[in-house]
Length: 116
Image (cartoon, rainbow, N blue to C red):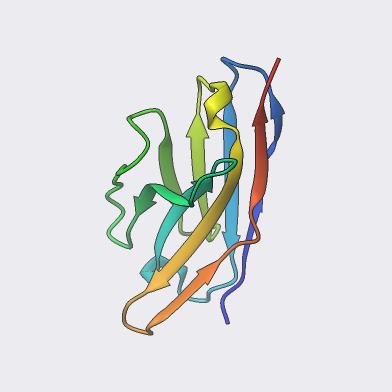
């Protein structure tokens, strides 16, 4: 069972920067599709950015405000935002998917609060 551990959350002022990290325990991390999701208060969890094994990122729900990247040597996926807004307050989750192994994993989530 692959485990994912997120870090980097906390309280940030509006306009501030954020870089979240998610470390995977997978032995073949480079074959896993990775993604970041968030769940804002009172809302459903939503996909905001994903980077497949091919390494080409996609941003279905981030409106161009987030950047996702991966470092296969460190088995880590990152999520960065350099201009946070109060509405970015949410619990951010990392997920991993391997269609060949038919496995999926979720991290425990990390809280990000954007407030002055």
